Length: 213
Image (cartoon, helix red, strand yellow):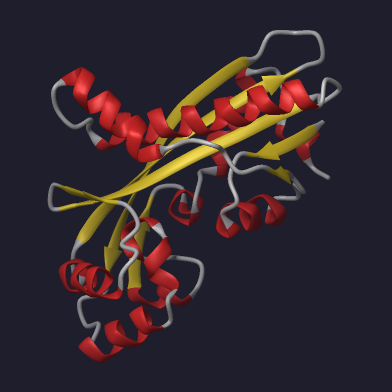
């Protein structure tokens, strides 16, 4: 049983490898900002984070699944897509991209608890059969240490790590020492919930152990 990760995220790739899965990786050809803007215009307001992460996860997985099914008719397996956003004090944060924004967020996160929302979309591709999809949202709350110094924040931001991850933090690398508690599936905070992926695969008739390399 083959697996394709609809992402080039090193964290998601590492998660699957640690779980015994060596996936093919393909980058989705989607415009996330355009998708979010179109959905907000249709709704008349911005989508709540749970709906938005699921919408984007589905768009990314669907794009890769359709292209893969067309380019490799013999592919038999799963396509996994995901998207994550961090909610703190009623505000939703994606990737900060700039050092000043990452610094501002860390001053706000210090001593606080937020929620990481993660959308999951899994497509089953079988030769000669229609694509089938299963979806779910996973959430985990993250509490940050209250004694993080300004110098530690500056050093962490200077490392570059928080600039390109949802919420401006990691739990499995340099940022892990600044997190005092995680409630929920810890892998959700890394990039996607493995227990959720296992359940969605099961809904599509694929057992988790079939995916082990």
